[in-house]
Image (cartoon, rainbow, N blue to C red; front, side):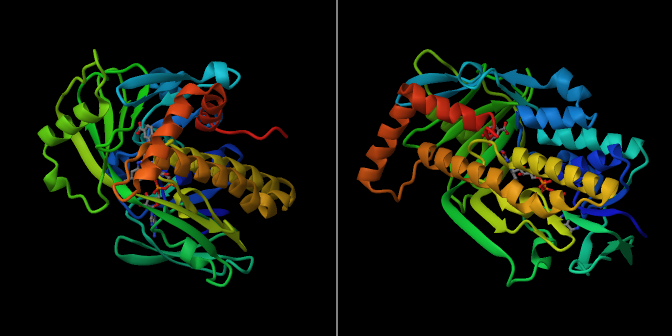
Length: 391
Ligand code: FAD
Ligand code: DHB
């Protein structure tokens, strides 16, 4: 088999890249280790920056997003029995964010790609990537129990944190930067109308809680839990009781409903540099991970892919390699801004039982400052909607 760009991984990054390349007339083959159903059911992120909505629209994959996405103009910060709303449009030159589940983006992109006759193969794990330091890379994968090869001009590693692409970069070239946290998130999807207009980020001494949503009838809620927490220890009643306590505000009640999905996500910050080597380009979680507070993971993946599709476009149109050469540096600037913001939001809002009494008091002082100061709210808002550089 042969193609221009071999894309590994049908998460949001790989699917969007395949679509953007197709729209530019560039052929690709997309190889995904898991089945279609698994990819379409996996519950993950849901908060989209304006730039993410824009690139999906530009890709022609935003019809349902435009109908069903929920536009939000701010967030609530809740702590010590108080609630502060941070308005985004007035602080960011009119920008806002949209709630639309990552699973819905994945479903929309898979349907569109298959409709257009894409070579998108599920249950086709890549086992090896060869020749990325030359000009004829080759990807080995397994389909129906048979090993096959895919020859290509470039490989796009969109295979997430545990994929095979990042390890294909020689160890003496790759630098990695990592931070772990003494927390994880327990996330649930519940069949109940959200009890809030905008998302609520709540700090309490019992730990962090987040009230998000997926539609007018479905709520998405998260609880900070220990990194070794076990779902078996979290029956529905305990989840709701903990959410009620952590989100409590005088005069406000949390509506409850049947939980349809639950999962525990570990938290880490991670960056791999450079994001490219020879003819291999990493995008999304394959290159970087953020803790979910601040909702940057999915947005970073989409931003990488937009830069990469432009760079491939210029290469295949005119042989210009400047875009490809600049890819890693261009992306890493955005990545590190989001890494810092996500780390900052995480340490601001989570309760670290190992922290000193001084650190805890300083944390509450910091929270009060963020909720009081116009300058601090401006800073949170401009990062949350997606920081853009002046030039
Ligand atoms: P992924 O979505 O991970 O896609 C990678 C794909 O590559 C997968 O489908 C995988 O099966 C495939 N693959 C792996 N290895 C191979 C191989 N060898 N061959 C072929 N295919 C392969 N972000 C937030 O902002 N908020 C959240 O609440 C949030 N929750 C999350 C919960 C979980 C459990 C996880 C894992 C992530 C969460 N994230 C969240 C992060 C966000 O979902 C990711 O940043 C986003 O999925 C990145 O997209 P991606 O396409 O780069 O990678
Ligand atoms: C969602 C996830 C996040 O990590 C976040 O900060 C906001 C919203 C969500 O899944 O809706």
